[in-house]
Amino acid sequence: MKLTIIGSGYVGLTTGACFAEVGHHVVCVDNDPRKVETLLAGQIPIYEPGLESLVKKNVAAKRLRFTTSTEEGVDHGEVLFIAVPTPPQADGSVDLSFIEKVAREISQFLDSYRVIVDKSTVPVKTGERVAQTIRRYAKPGVEFDVVSNPEFLREGSAVADLMKPDRIVIGGNTDRAIALMQKVYEPFAAPVLVTDINSAELIKHAANSFLALKISYANALSEICEASGADVIKVAEGIGADKRIGREFLNAGLGYGGSCFPKDIAAFIAIADQMGTPFTLLKEVQRINQRQIDRFIDGIREALWVLKDKKLAVWGLAFKPNTDDVRSSVAISVVEKLVSEGADVTVYDPKAMDKAKELAFASKVKFATSPLEAAAGAEALIIATEWPEFASVDLSELRTTMRAPMIFDGRNLIDPVAAADFGFQYRGIGRGVVETRA
Ligand code: UDX
Image (cartoon, rainbow, N blue to C red; front, side, top):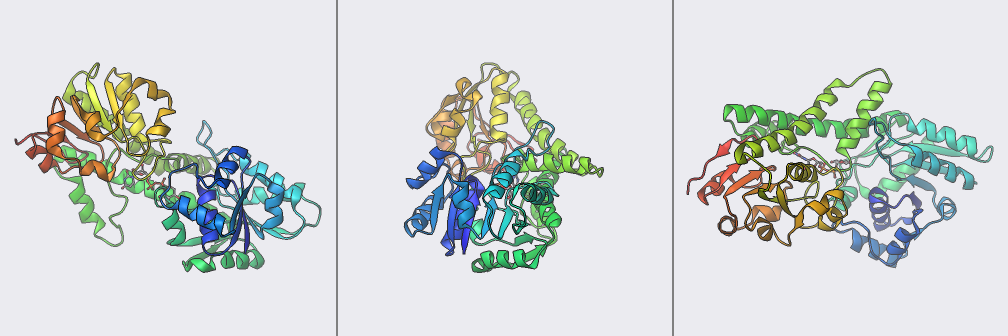
Protein backbone atom coordinates (compact mmCIF):
# COMPACT_ATOMS: atom_id res chain seq x y z
CA MET A 1 0.00 0.00 0.00
CA LYS A 2 0.99 3.63 -0.33
CA LEU A 3 1.29 5.22 3.11
CA THR A 4 2.29 8.65 4.37
CA ILE A 5 3.53 9.57 7.81
CA ILE A 6 3.42 13.25 8.76
CA GLY A 7 5.99 13.98 11.47
CA SER A 8 9.27 12.04 11.37
CA GLY A 9 10.02 12.03 15.09
CA TYR A 10 10.34 9.01 17.30
CA VAL A 11 6.97 7.45 16.55
CA GLY A 12 6.69 8.64 12.94
CA LEU A 13 10.13 7.51 11.83
CA THR A 14 9.96 4.10 13.51
CA THR A 15 6.42 3.48 12.25
CA GLY A 16 7.38 4.55 8.72
CA ALA A 17 10.46 2.30 8.67
CA CYS A 18 8.49 -0.71 9.94
CA PHE A 19 5.68 -0.17 7.43
CA ALA A 20 8.30 -0.07 4.66
CA GLU A 21 9.95 -3.21 6.04
CA VAL A 22 6.73 -5.21 5.56
CA GLY A 23 6.45 -4.03 1.96
CA HIS A 24 4.43 -0.81 2.03
CA HIS A 25 5.61 2.23 0.06
CA VAL A 26 6.10 4.95 2.61
CA VAL A 27 6.67 8.70 2.42
CA CYS A 28 7.71 10.38 5.68
CA VAL A 29 7.06 14.11 5.85
CA ASP A 30 8.77 16.49 8.26
CA ASN A 31 8.72 20.28 8.24
CA ASP A 32 12.33 20.48 9.49
CA PRO A 33 14.52 20.56 6.34
CA ARG A 34 17.66 19.71 8.34
CA LYS A 35 16.03 16.58 9.74
CA VAL A 36 14.92 15.51 6.27
CA GLU A 37 18.47 16.08 4.93
CA THR A 38 19.96 14.00 7.72
CA LEU A 39 17.49 11.20 7.05
CA LEU A 40 18.11 11.32 3.31
CA ALA A 41 21.83 10.94 4.07
CA GLY A 42 20.98 7.70 5.89
CA GLN A 43 21.55 9.04 9.42
CA ILE A 44 18.93 8.96 12.11
CA PRO A 45 18.70 11.72 14.72
CA ILE A 46 17.85 9.36 17.62
CA TYR A 47 19.41 6.29 19.19
CA GLU A 48 17.07 3.34 18.78
CA PRO A 49 18.42 -0.21 18.38
CA GLY A 50 17.90 -1.57 14.86
CA LEU A 51 16.31 1.57 13.46
CA GLU A 52 19.21 2.97 11.45
CA SER A 53 19.79 -0.25 9.51
CA LEU A 54 16.04 -0.58 8.91
CA VAL A 55 15.86 2.97 7.52
CA LYS A 56 18.93 2.48 5.30
CA LYS A 57 17.69 -0.85 3.97
CA ASN A 58 14.25 0.47 3.05
CA VAL A 59 15.54 3.72 1.57
CA ALA A 60 17.86 1.64 -0.64
CA ALA A 61 14.93 -0.61 -1.60
CA LYS A 62 12.98 2.54 -2.55
CA ARG A 63 10.15 1.70 -0.18
CA LEU A 64 10.91 4.64 2.13
CA ARG A 65 11.52 8.26 1.29
CA PHE A 66 11.58 11.59 3.09
CA THR A 67 10.28 15.00 2.12
CA THR A 68 9.38 18.36 3.61
CA SER A 69 6.34 18.62 1.33
CA THR A 70 2.95 17.86 2.87
CA GLU A 71 1.49 18.15 -0.64
CA GLU A 72 3.71 15.29 -1.83
CA GLY A 73 2.69 13.28 1.23
CA VAL A 74 -1.06 13.81 0.77
CA ASP A 75 -0.72 13.02 -2.91
CA HIS A 76 1.16 9.76 -2.22
CA GLY A 77 -0.65 8.05 0.66
CA GLU A 78 -3.96 6.21 0.63
CA VAL A 79 -3.65 6.46 4.41
CA LEU A 80 -2.10 9.52 6.07
CA PHE A 81 -0.75 9.02 9.59
CA ILE A 82 -0.37 12.08 11.80
CA ALA A 83 2.58 11.55 14.15
CA VAL A 84 3.44 15.05 15.33
CA PRO A 85 4.21 16.05 18.94
CA THR A 86 1.42 16.54 21.47
CA PRO A 87 3.38 18.27 24.26
CA PRO A 88 2.03 19.06 27.69
CA GLN A 89 0.96 22.55 28.70
CA ALA A 90 1.62 24.09 32.12
CA ASP A 91 -1.68 22.74 33.54
CA GLY A 92 -0.99 19.19 32.32
CA SER A 93 -3.47 19.38 29.43
CA VAL A 94 -2.29 18.55 25.91
CA ASP A 95 -1.17 21.14 23.36
CA LEU A 96 -2.98 20.06 20.19
CA SER A 97 -1.82 22.93 18.01
CA PHE A 98 0.53 20.74 15.91
CA ILE A 99 -2.28 18.27 15.21
CA GLU A 100 -4.65 21.09 14.27
CA LYS A 101 -2.03 22.63 11.98
CA VAL A 102 -1.38 19.34 10.18
CA ALA A 103 -5.16 18.77 9.80
CA ARG A 104 -5.42 22.18 8.10
CA GLU A 105 -2.40 21.46 5.89
CA ILE A 106 -3.79 18.09 4.81
CA SER A 107 -7.18 19.59 3.96
CA GLN A 108 -5.53 22.09 1.65
CA PHE A 109 -4.24 19.29 -0.63
CA LEU A 110 -7.07 16.79 -0.28
CA ASP A 111 -8.51 15.87 -3.71
CA SER A 112 -9.84 12.36 -3.29
CA TYR A 113 -10.66 9.86 -0.53
CA ARG A 114 -8.04 9.46 2.18
CA VAL A 115 -7.99 7.90 5.63
CA ILE A 116 -6.44 10.31 8.11
CA VAL A 117 -5.05 8.59 11.18
CA ASP A 118 -4.23 10.03 14.58
CA LYS A 119 -1.10 8.09 15.56
CA SER A 120 0.04 10.60 18.17
CA THR A 121 -1.24 10.23 21.72
CA VAL A 122 -4.25 12.52 21.90
CA PRO A 123 -7.09 13.17 24.33
CA VAL A 124 -10.38 11.43 23.74
CA LYS A 125 -12.55 13.33 21.23
CA THR A 126 -9.56 14.68 19.25
CA GLY A 127 -10.61 12.60 16.25
CA GLU A 128 -13.93 14.46 16.15
CA ARG A 129 -12.04 17.76 16.17
CA VAL A 130 -9.69 16.66 13.40
CA ALA A 131 -12.65 15.61 11.25
CA GLN A 132 -14.40 18.96 11.86
CA THR A 133 -11.23 20.88 11.00
CA ILE A 134 -10.63 19.00 7.76
CA ARG A 135 -14.24 19.40 6.72
CA ARG A 136 -14.06 23.13 7.42
CA TYR A 137 -10.92 23.71 5.32
CA ALA A 138 -11.16 21.06 2.57
CA LYS A 139 -12.80 21.47 -0.82
CA PRO A 140 -16.54 20.90 -0.52
CA GLY A 141 -17.60 17.32 -1.09
CA VAL A 142 -14.16 15.75 -0.81
CA GLU A 143 -14.35 12.36 0.95
CA PHE A 144 -12.22 11.30 3.92
CA ASP A 145 -12.41 9.35 7.17
CA VAL A 146 -10.61 9.92 10.44
CA VAL A 147 -9.25 6.96 12.40
CA SER A 148 -7.53 6.64 15.76
CA ASN A 149 -4.67 4.13 15.79
CA PRO A 150 -2.59 4.69 18.93
CA GLU A 151 1.02 3.63 19.21
CA PHE A 152 2.24 1.50 22.11
CA LEU A 153 5.96 1.32 21.35
CA ARG A 154 8.56 1.51 24.08
CA GLU A 155 11.77 3.42 23.52
CA GLY A 156 14.72 1.07 23.29
CA SER A 157 12.62 -1.72 21.80
CA ALA A 158 10.53 0.36 19.43
CA VAL A 159 11.34 -1.64 16.29
CA ALA A 160 10.59 -4.98 17.97
CA ASP A 161 7.39 -3.58 19.54
CA LEU A 162 6.19 -2.36 16.15
CA MET A 163 7.10 -5.47 14.21
CA LYS A 164 5.52 -7.80 16.80
CA PRO A 165 2.82 -5.82 18.61
CA ASP A 166 0.67 -7.32 21.39
CA ARG A 167 -2.31 -5.75 19.70
CA ILE A 168 -3.31 -3.21 17.09
CA VAL A 169 -6.11 -0.83 18.03
CA ILE A 170 -8.13 0.62 15.17
CA GLY A 171 -10.79 3.14 16.11
CA GLY A 172 -12.95 4.06 13.14
CA ASN A 173 -16.49 4.98 12.26
CA THR A 174 -16.81 3.59 8.71
CA ASP A 175 -16.30 0.12 7.21
CA ARG A 176 -14.30 1.62 4.35
CA ALA A 177 -11.69 3.18 6.67
CA ILE A 178 -11.52 0.13 8.94
CA ALA A 179 -11.00 -2.21 5.96
CA LEU A 180 -8.10 -0.07 4.68
CA MET A 181 -6.52 0.01 8.14
CA GLN A 182 -6.83 -3.78 8.45
CA LYS A 183 -5.00 -4.07 5.13
CA VAL A 184 -2.20 -1.81 6.45
CA TYR A 185 -1.65 -4.14 9.40
CA GLU A 186 -2.24 -7.48 7.61
CA PRO A 187 1.52 -8.20 7.24
CA PHE A 188 2.08 -7.86 10.99
CA ALA A 189 -0.01 -10.90 11.94
CA ALA A 190 -1.05 -9.29 15.25
CA PRO A 191 -4.43 -9.34 17.01
CA VAL A 192 -6.54 -6.39 15.84
CA LEU A 193 -9.11 -4.73 18.06
CA VAL A 194 -11.63 -2.60 16.18
CA THR A 195 -13.42 0.08 18.20
CA ASP A 196 -15.08 3.44 17.79
CA ILE A 197 -12.73 6.46 17.64
CA ASN A 198 -13.31 7.66 21.21
CA SER A 199 -12.58 4.23 22.73
CA ALA A 200 -9.34 3.89 20.76
CA GLU A 201 -8.18 7.29 21.95
CA LEU A 202 -9.04 6.43 25.52
CA ILE A 203 -7.26 3.05 25.36
CA LYS A 204 -3.89 4.75 24.94
CA HIS A 205 -4.20 7.00 27.99
CA ALA A 206 -5.82 4.23 30.02
CA ALA A 207 -3.02 1.76 29.17
CA ASN A 208 -0.17 4.11 30.05
CA SER A 209 -1.91 5.23 33.24
CA PHE A 210 -2.39 1.62 34.29
CA LEU A 211 1.31 0.86 33.76
CA ALA A 212 2.25 3.95 35.78
CA LEU A 213 -0.19 2.83 38.46
CA LYS A 214 1.51 -0.57 38.62
CA ILE A 215 4.91 1.08 39.09
CA SER A 216 3.53 3.39 41.79
CA TYR A 217 1.91 0.43 43.51
CA ALA A 218 5.32 -1.26 43.74
CA ASN A 219 6.86 2.00 44.94
CA ALA A 220 4.23 2.44 47.64
CA LEU A 221 4.93 -1.15 48.71
CA SER A 222 8.66 -0.36 48.83
CA GLU A 223 8.06 2.16 51.60
CA ILE A 224 6.13 -0.40 53.66
CA CYS A 225 8.87 -2.97 52.98
CA GLU A 226 11.52 -0.57 54.29
CA ALA A 227 9.48 0.08 57.41
CA SER A 228 8.89 -3.61 58.05
CA GLY A 229 12.18 -5.15 56.92
CA ALA A 230 10.58 -7.00 53.99
CA ASP A 231 12.15 -7.18 50.51
CA VAL A 232 10.08 -5.52 47.77
CA ILE A 233 11.66 -7.71 45.07
CA LYS A 234 10.39 -10.86 46.79
CA VAL A 235 6.99 -9.26 47.34
CA ALA A 236 6.80 -8.29 43.65
CA GLU A 237 7.74 -11.85 42.66
CA GLY A 238 5.11 -13.26 44.97
CA ILE A 239 2.27 -11.11 43.73
CA GLY A 240 3.47 -11.05 40.11
CA ALA A 241 3.30 -14.86 39.92
CA ASP A 242 -0.48 -14.50 39.89
CA LYS A 243 -1.28 -14.45 36.15
CA ARG A 244 -3.97 -11.84 36.75
CA ILE A 245 -1.34 -9.45 38.12
CA GLY A 246 1.87 -10.29 36.21
CA ARG A 247 5.46 -9.53 37.28
CA GLU A 248 6.19 -6.80 34.73
CA PHE A 249 6.14 -3.12 35.74
CA LEU A 250 6.32 -4.00 39.43
CA ASN A 251 9.93 -2.89 39.81
CA ALA A 252 10.23 -0.45 42.67
CA GLY A 253 12.81 2.26 42.18
CA LEU A 254 13.12 5.97 41.61
CA GLY A 255 9.83 5.97 39.76
CA TYR A 256 8.79 6.44 36.15
CA GLY A 257 10.09 9.16 33.88
CA GLY A 258 10.45 9.66 30.13
CA SER A 259 8.53 11.46 27.49
CA CYS A 260 5.34 9.40 27.84
CA PHE A 261 4.26 8.42 31.33
CA PRO A 262 4.55 11.76 33.19
CA LYS A 263 2.88 13.64 30.34
CA ASP A 264 0.20 11.05 29.63
CA ILE A 265 -0.83 10.68 33.26
CA ALA A 266 -1.04 14.48 33.63
CA ALA A 267 -3.05 14.65 30.41
CA PHE A 268 -5.47 11.92 31.49
CA ILE A 269 -6.01 13.67 34.81
CA ALA A 270 -6.70 16.94 32.95
CA ILE A 271 -9.07 15.24 30.49
CA ALA A 272 -11.02 13.57 33.30
CA ASP A 273 -11.23 16.88 35.20
CA GLN A 274 -12.46 18.67 32.08
CA MET A 275 -15.20 16.08 31.63
CA GLY A 276 -16.29 16.48 35.24
CA THR A 277 -15.20 12.95 36.19
CA PRO A 278 -12.01 13.51 38.25
CA PHE A 279 -9.59 10.55 38.26
CA THR A 280 -8.25 11.01 41.78
CA LEU A 281 -6.52 7.61 41.80
CA LEU A 282 -4.09 8.93 39.19
CA LYS A 283 -3.29 11.97 41.32
CA GLU A 284 -2.10 9.54 43.97
CA VAL A 285 -0.01 7.72 41.34
CA GLN A 286 1.75 11.02 40.57
CA ARG A 287 2.24 11.77 44.25
CA ILE A 288 3.84 8.39 44.95
CA ASN A 289 6.13 8.84 41.95
CA GLN A 290 7.44 12.18 43.20
CA ARG A 291 7.73 10.84 46.73
CA GLN A 292 10.18 8.15 45.61
CA ILE A 293 12.75 10.80 44.60
CA ASP A 294 12.21 12.75 47.81
CA ARG A 295 12.58 9.64 49.95
CA PHE A 296 15.73 8.63 48.07
CA ILE A 297 17.38 12.03 48.55
CA ASP A 298 16.31 12.00 52.22
CA GLY A 299 18.05 8.62 52.59
CA ILE A 300 21.27 9.99 51.05
CA ARG A 301 21.14 13.04 53.30
CA GLU A 302 20.50 10.92 56.33
CA ALA A 303 23.47 8.66 55.60
CA LEU A 304 25.95 11.32 54.48
CA TRP A 305 24.73 14.03 56.88
CA VAL A 306 25.86 17.06 54.82
CA LEU A 307 25.79 16.99 51.02
CA LYS A 308 27.66 20.25 50.46
CA ASP A 309 31.08 19.57 48.89
CA LYS A 310 30.58 15.79 49.08
CA LYS A 311 32.10 14.06 46.06
CA LEU A 312 29.32 11.91 44.62
CA ALA A 313 29.20 9.64 41.56
CA VAL A 314 25.95 9.17 39.67
CA TRP A 315 25.58 6.28 37.22
CA GLY A 316 22.80 6.81 34.71
CA LEU A 317 21.21 9.86 33.11
CA ALA A 318 18.83 8.31 30.56
CA PHE A 319 15.24 7.89 31.74
CA LYS A 320 15.68 4.12 31.34
CA PRO A 321 18.30 1.75 29.84
CA ASN A 322 18.92 1.28 26.10
CA THR A 323 18.04 4.82 25.16
CA ASP A 324 19.84 8.16 24.99
CA ASP A 325 16.61 9.94 25.91
CA VAL A 326 16.88 12.24 28.93
CA ARG A 327 13.44 13.85 28.68
CA SER A 328 11.76 13.93 32.11
CA SER A 329 14.47 11.60 33.36
CA VAL A 330 14.26 10.88 37.07
CA ALA A 331 18.06 10.39 37.05
CA ILE A 332 18.50 14.01 36.02
CA SER A 333 16.08 15.21 38.71
CA VAL A 334 18.22 13.36 41.27
CA VAL A 335 21.44 14.95 39.96
CA GLU A 336 19.83 18.42 39.95
CA LYS A 337 18.73 17.95 43.54
CA LEU A 338 22.20 16.83 44.68
CA VAL A 339 23.84 19.74 42.86
CA SER A 340 21.37 22.23 44.37
CA GLU A 341 22.50 21.05 47.81
CA GLY A 342 26.13 21.79 46.91
CA ALA A 343 27.39 18.27 46.16
CA ASP A 344 30.33 17.82 43.78
CA VAL A 345 28.79 15.39 41.28
CA THR A 346 30.45 13.32 38.54
CA VAL A 347 28.09 11.55 36.15
CA TYR A 348 28.34 8.74 33.64
CA ASP A 349 25.84 7.22 31.22
CA PRO A 350 26.61 4.74 28.41
CA LYS A 351 24.46 6.51 25.78
CA ALA A 352 22.89 9.69 27.11
CA MET A 353 25.92 11.91 27.78
CA ASP A 354 25.61 14.00 24.61
CA LYS A 355 21.92 14.70 25.15
CA ALA A 356 22.53 15.45 28.86
CA LYS A 357 25.30 17.92 28.02
CA GLU A 358 22.72 20.08 26.25
CA LEU A 359 20.71 20.55 29.49
CA ALA A 360 21.07 23.39 31.98
CA PHE A 361 22.50 21.25 34.82
CA ALA A 362 25.43 20.14 32.64
CA SER A 363 27.67 23.08 33.55
CA LYS A 364 27.38 22.17 37.21
CA VAL A 365 28.59 18.55 37.00
CA LYS A 366 31.63 16.64 35.68
CA PHE A 367 31.21 14.01 32.99
CA ALA A 368 33.30 10.84 33.24
CA THR A 369 34.09 8.41 30.42
CA SER A 370 33.41 5.19 32.36
CA PRO A 371 31.52 4.05 35.47
CA LEU A 372 34.77 3.50 37.39
CA GLU A 373 36.16 6.89 36.37
CA ALA A 374 32.99 8.53 37.69
CA ALA A 375 33.39 6.65 40.97
CA ALA A 376 37.08 7.51 41.46
CA GLY A 377 37.47 9.23 44.83
CA ALA A 378 33.70 9.36 45.39
CA GLU A 379 32.25 9.33 48.89
CA ALA A 380 29.10 7.64 47.64
CA LEU A 381 27.78 6.09 44.44
CA ILE A 382 24.23 6.66 43.28
CA ILE A 383 22.68 4.37 40.66
CA ALA A 384 19.88 6.20 38.90
CA THR A 385 19.28 4.21 35.68
CA GLU A 386 19.29 0.41 35.42
CA TRP A 387 21.83 -0.03 32.61
CA PRO A 388 22.92 -3.72 32.56
CA GLU A 389 26.60 -2.70 32.36
CA PHE A 390 26.35 -1.15 35.83
CA ALA A 391 25.27 -4.48 37.26
CA SER A 392 28.39 -6.17 35.95
CA VAL A 393 30.94 -3.66 37.24
CA ASP A 394 33.72 -5.32 39.25
CA LEU A 395 32.74 -4.51 42.84
CA SER A 396 36.26 -5.08 44.11
CA GLU A 397 37.68 -2.48 41.68
CA LEU A 398 34.82 -0.17 42.55
CA ARG A 399 35.58 -0.53 46.24
CA THR A 400 39.27 0.30 45.63
CA THR A 401 38.57 3.38 43.54
CA MET A 402 35.97 4.97 45.84
CA ARG A 403 36.96 7.04 48.82
CA ALA A 404 34.14 5.75 51.00
CA PRO A 405 32.16 2.54 50.33
CA MET A 406 28.55 3.61 50.08
CA ILE A 407 26.05 2.66 47.36
CA PHE A 408 22.58 4.18 46.98
CA ASP A 409 20.93 1.93 44.43
CA GLY A 410 17.88 3.74 43.08
CA ARG A 411 17.07 0.87 40.70
CA ASN A 412 17.81 -2.21 42.83
CA LEU A 413 20.43 -3.26 40.31
CA ILE A 414 23.16 -4.60 42.58
CA ASP A 415 22.88 -7.63 44.83
CA PRO A 416 22.93 -6.23 48.38
CA VAL A 417 24.68 -9.29 49.78
CA ALA A 418 27.45 -9.13 47.15
CA ALA A 419 27.86 -5.41 47.84
CA ALA A 420 28.12 -6.07 51.56
CA ASP A 421 30.66 -8.86 50.96
CA PHE A 422 32.88 -6.39 49.10
CA GLY A 423 32.72 -3.97 52.01
CA PHE A 424 30.01 -1.60 50.86
CA GLN A 425 27.23 -0.09 52.87
CA TYR A 426 24.26 -0.57 50.54
CA ARG A 427 20.88 1.10 50.41
CA GLY A 428 18.37 -0.03 47.79
CA ILE A 429 14.69 0.78 47.38
CA GLY A 430 12.36 -1.27 49.56
CA ARG A 431 15.15 -3.57 50.71
CA GLY A 432 16.41 -1.91 53.87
CA VAL A 433 20.00 -0.93 54.61
CA VAL A 434 22.60 -3.68 54.31
CA GLU A 435 25.66 -3.06 56.46
CA THR A 436 29.11 -4.02 55.27
CA ARG A 437 30.23 -7.58 56.05
CA ALA A 438 33.84 -7.27 54.93
C1 UDX B 1 5.94 3.77 27.66
C2 UDX B 1 5.00 2.57 27.44
O1 UDX B 1 5.61 1.36 27.90
C3 UDX B 1 4.63 2.47 25.98
O2 UDX B 1 3.71 1.41 25.79
C4 UDX B 1 4.01 3.78 25.54
O3 UDX B 1 3.63 3.75 24.19
C5 UDX B 1 4.96 4.93 25.80
O4 UDX B 1 5.33 4.95 27.17
P1 UDX B 1 8.53 4.25 27.41
O5 UDX B 1 8.27 5.65 27.81
O6 UDX B 1 9.45 4.00 26.28
O7 UDX B 1 7.17 3.51 27.00
O8 UDX B 1 9.13 3.54 28.71
P2 UDX B 1 8.88 2.28 29.63
O9 UDX B 1 9.81 1.18 29.27
O10 UDX B 1 7.46 1.92 29.70
O11 UDX B 1 9.39 2.86 31.04
C6 UDX B 1 8.82 4.05 31.58
C7 UDX B 1 9.45 4.44 32.90
O12 UDX B 1 9.00 3.59 33.93
C8 UDX B 1 10.96 4.40 32.96
O13 UDX B 1 11.42 5.56 33.62
C9 UDX B 1 11.27 3.15 33.77
O14 UDX B 1 12.50 3.23 34.46
C10 UDX B 1 10.08 3.13 34.72
N1 UDX B 1 9.75 1.79 35.24
C11 UDX B 1 9.29 0.83 34.39
C12 UDX B 1 9.83 1.54 36.62
O15 UDX B 1 10.22 2.40 37.41
N2 UDX B 1 9.46 0.29 37.07
C13 UDX B 1 9.01 -0.69 36.24
O16 UDX B 1 8.69 -1.77 36.75
C14 UDX B 1 8.93 -0.41 34.86
